[in-house]
Image 1: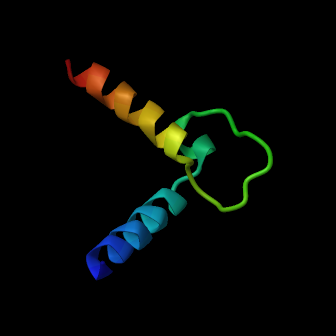
Image 2: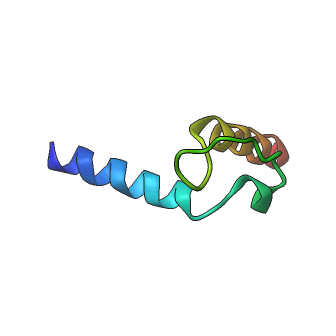
Length: 53
């Protein structure tokens, strides 16, 4: 279980380093924590995947 906790902490830290404005996404209101939301990260992943094709 420790590995799972560490993974969650690492993912939150990575998402927290970059904000939506940093990557060209619209900035929504009312964020509880800084950084990208999971949904925003998924949008970026799709952009990268389609650019690689």
